[in-house]
Every structure is written in C-alpha cells, then in structure tokens.
Length: 260
Image (cartoon, rainbow, N blue to C red; front, side, top):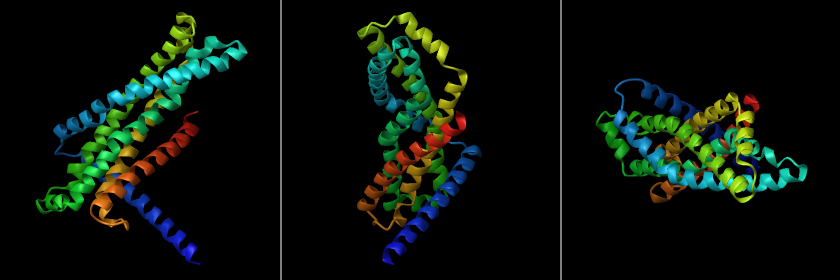
C-alpha cells in the first residue's frame, strides 16, 4: 500500500512539474518577445552557451566522425559498398547524431551551469531581491537564456555536422584510402534539403527544452523535497542534467517519427 502511495505521489509530482515547465516556458517566451528587450544579456548568453561550447563540440564532432568512418568502412567493405561511406557518415550525423550529441554536450557544459547559477541566486535570496525591486526574475534570468539557446543550438549542430564529416574524411580517405571524389560525391547525392531541415528543427526544439528544464530546476529548487541550501542546488543541478538528457532522447525519437 505504501509503495502505491509513493508511486502515486511521484506521478502527481511529475505531472505538476510538467505543467509548471510548460507555464514557465510560455511566460519566458512571451516576455522575450515583448519590450523591453535585453539584447546585451542575450549576446552575453550567446557567448556563454555558444562560443564557449565550440571547443567541446569540435572534439566530440571530430572523433564521432572518425569512429563513424572507421566502423562504417569495415561494415560496408563486407558488401563491397565502401564507396557509400561518405553518405553513411553524413546522413548519420545530419539526421541524428549531430543534434542529439550537440544537445547532450551543451547540457553538460552550459545547462548544468544555468541550473546552478539560478539555484544559488534562489538560496541567496537574490531572486527575492529582484522581485522587491519590481524586476521580473523570469524576464531577467530565463528569457535571455531561452533565446540564446534557441539561436545557439542549430549553429552548434551545423558546426558539429561539418566537423564530423571532416572526421569521417580523415578516417575513410586519408587513413583507409577511399577515393576523395567518391566520398564527397556520395555526400552530395545522398543528403537532401529535408535532412538538413529536420536536423535544424530538432536542434531548435532541443535548445528550448534544455533551457526550460535547466532554468526551471534552478528557479524552483527551493520547492524540492531534497532540501534547501547547497544540497538543494546540487540536487537541482543533477536533476537538470539527467532530465534534460532523457527528454532530449525522447524528443529525438518523437521528432524523428514525424520527420521521416
């Protein structure tokens, strides 16, 4: 009986969080579209979320492409189709791996930081101080991060895709000897506009989801049963990363079902 009560309580909490995040997103998005606009804060967040993630995106994209090139070559060569390596690498990256891995990398680097920053502002009563000064904390803290995430994720995904294709080139062409012209010819023939568009749509959705989940976890960390103070911030940061990664993968499956 106690187990059923606990499961019921967790389910109700999940529904409550889901509704809260939807309302949080709508309020933040609406405030981002209405004056006064916070261009300076948006640019600052673009630098933090986008520019500072370039190095990790470069490294992950390069080695992902190299692994795809290596695995793809030894799989395709069994069927005498190693000439299709370029198409296999490019489609894998553009359709799936680029948006999903970029989102997961940014969650680890910037998403956790968003939750921790807002959580610390909550426990140090800086958010209460903003409300006392009649400054809307959602507009001030969340809206710039939301806009910057929606802009940054597609750009980082495009960067990841290009670097990944170069990684596949290094493995397939430079190391394993596939003809360079065939590698790029297969990419040009296989990749269509809807593949690229689908990847960008996924990146846009992932950007919004990550910003909402991470900022929501930090903003309402004082309502968590796990405790207030440093422990609460720690739990909120961990939850933001775990929930964001799971939601991104679920959203990836749902979006792929609609886009195929």
